[in-house]
Amino acid sequence: MPATNVLITGASGGIGYELAKLFARDHHNLVLVARSGDKLAQIAGELRTQNITVRTVALDLTQPPAPKFLFDQLQSEDIAIGILINNAGFGAFGEFAQMSNEEIFGQIQLNIIALTELTRLFLPPMLARRSGRLMNVASTAGFQAGPLMAVYYATKAYVISFSEAIANEVRNSGVTVTCFCPGATHTGFAKRAGNDKSRLFKQLGAMNVDKVALDGYRAVIEGRGLAISGVHNWIVVQSTRFAPRKLVTAISRWISEPT
Ligand SMILES: NC(=O)c1ccc[n+]([C@@H]2O[C@H](COP(=O)([O-])OP(=O)(O)OC[C@H]3O[C@@H](n4cnc5c(N)ncnc54)[C@H](OP(=O)(O)O)[C@@H]3O)[C@@H](O)[C@H]2O)c1
Image 1 (cartoon, rainbow, N blue to C red):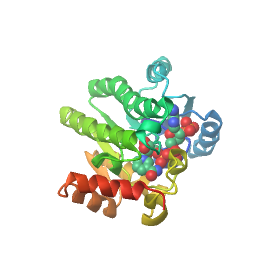
Image 2: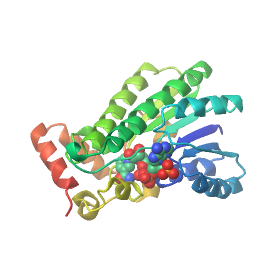
Image 3: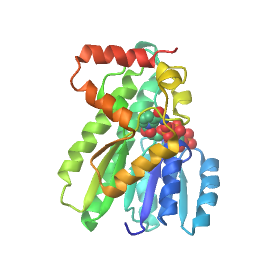
């Protein structure tokens, strides 16, 4: 794919950072977004050695004006985005009734609303150019209900449904929409979510972030619709389609519980 401008949200660590390295390796210019401006500046310095331009924008995407601010900023600088990676997201562990409003609505604001608004803003210019790639990072969590992380699992179900639907709407337009679903992955995610002591992360094993990012990178470049990282995750997702929903929900709770 010819070099273009790639916008990655949540690029200060984890999967987003690894994706940034892969795009830089292939000479794409980058716009990196996250809250931690200092981390972004450090990453930009590191990636500029690949002879690319790297623009960083320190932004809290849970703040409602943030997506439009970002879009307007890039327009004013004449930076047309050829690839958008909606990767920023977080989860929070705990029973819904005990969870703070900040955690509940923060997840919805970042994982659903910011992702939807960025798609709304950046997709039409891609369609007008008849060229572009969009990748929304969902999760294998989106394929079933998730007791103890009810809101997070539900936000990712939204991302899968939304992404598959718009992928269909834009077929034959020259633009592709990919929904990328990692399973448990070694990043800062589990610690922030408070589920790093869960059976999922402690016993069942998480994937290495570089491998997961490479799967996502290939999926978006190939313009695949839905991509699940890891064969074992693919098998688990398929098995949930045929098992009784109550059983799937009970197993989902069991893997989220601390060991
Ligand atoms: N790790 C897993 O097990 C796993 C599994 C499936 C799916 N995923 C999904 O993969 C994506 C990336 O997660 P990760 O594992 O790489 O997590 P991570 O290591 O915690 O990285 C999350 C990134 O999002 C940024 N971010 C968080 N809140 C933000 C906000 N309010 N505004 C802007 N940026 C924000 C963080 O930067 P700042 O803190 O600097 O803002 C960081 O760059 C998420 O959508 C997650 O749901 C992760």
